[in-house]
Length: 398
Image (cartoon, rainbow, N blue to C red):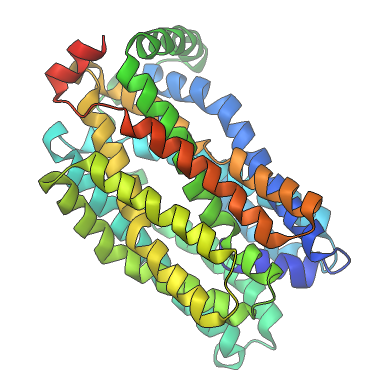
């Protein structure tokens, strides 16, 4: 989705739109899907927590995502409105599934292993996505090797391969992972009522804990910037006139750089300071955005891709583990689920900012600078968050 969809959208589906107009619609699709998750995920997540439905709801959203991804194969050339709709539904399904997937960490890992499981999860996610993406890149570079006629057909079949990959690697979780509360599964209506009550309680608890609330606000802003860079990078490169092969290769390189760096930053965070490492990662992202507004050559894009790969896994994994140490130990599932829901719908401001600035200024370079604001404010808020032990943090924050 990050690599092929923006390219195919501009060159196949949105051939009648200008570069700035296609950027606007892609930004609107990403912002719209994030907003839907923002409205639905807190309630759905609370329902899942109360009814022992995390796994079932994750698989439901996963099924929708698989169908929408495969459906892109059927969207005809020039049908950009349909492409936007299918993409938006797929993005909603992907983000929704990940809310419940992330929340399952409290069912499969002990509290003392959150750092390791969090970092390893992101690292394996990047290497797994990178392997299939490498095959897809080969499909587009050498379609004849796969019995295909041209690059366009290769891209369309790549969407099908992603859907199949997603389905196959969901099977181990579907078959072998169990929720701790699965035996207490409630009727969905009962879970909905209990979920609304839990959602209100969670919000009131977090609001009274200043440090947790400050962290969540900081996280919402800087992770919005992270998600925006991931979703809009290829579209931005196309708007600057870079060849699609350069962008695809750079994105592939990012996946493989992120695998060892996520593990390394996870180790560094446990040895030094999670907050300190996160602040360094935010600074790298901000510098990348500033630098990208002036880049002219393909080599610059490769360097930027490598820089992002060095920090994108670490900033996500350490944010998750830092939060886990701040929350009340006996309410880990409730607070951790709230954190994951917040993170998953933090992709509204950035894409919307890029789309609006791109159309208003007529400059794709100006649009990327808008993201720096999210990183700057997020870093400022995070700087004032106190890193504390579980017991001390909860006591002082309360």
